[in-house]
Image (cartoon, rainbow, N blue to C red; front, top):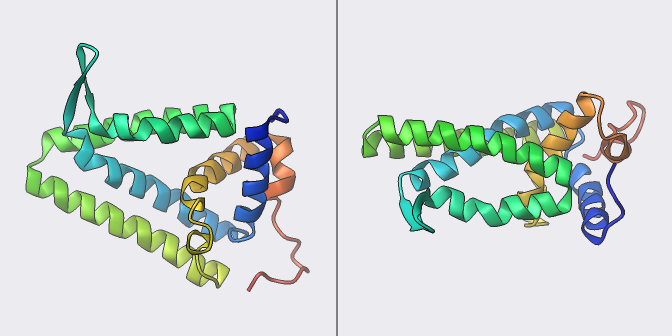
Amino acid sequence: MLHETKMGGLFQRQLAVYVEYHRDPRNTAMHVVGILLLFTGAVLPLTSVKVPLFGTELSLAVILALPVLIYWLMLDMALGVGILAVSVVLFSIATTISTQVSTMTMWAIFATLVVLGLAAQTIGHKVFEGREASLFTFPSHLLLGPMFVMAKLFIALGFRRDLAAILAPLPTNSLSTR
């Protein structure tokens, strides 16, 4: 259950606005694909840059992602932990790719992942929602996408009834958001 903390209340308010741009389940599916591709693409080149820190080497990808991961944990601990778990898998995939391919191939994969990720999100909004992405009106929504997707997963698995009411699909006889 989401505790009524300052961050929890902020998250619920942000999610209520975000969901208005993401009502169509096909758009949500496109966001799952797009977010996974974009995250993996974004961290891919950064995984090959190692930074010595406290007697160990961390990838620049992990160092730069930490503030966002902490923010997600502060917004909602359960969803943040879910995102953290998925992030570990995506960091591992990106690290494996960056260590197994040439630099040129790594940059080609980076570009492909970013283009496909952006295309998935653009198609989701233009084709299925019939409107611009919320990111253009609310830049902070860039950080809400992963939380939205994780919330949808938790709800689908039978958890987080508190968020289910916020993310409920529109009734079929309601006015469209188009």
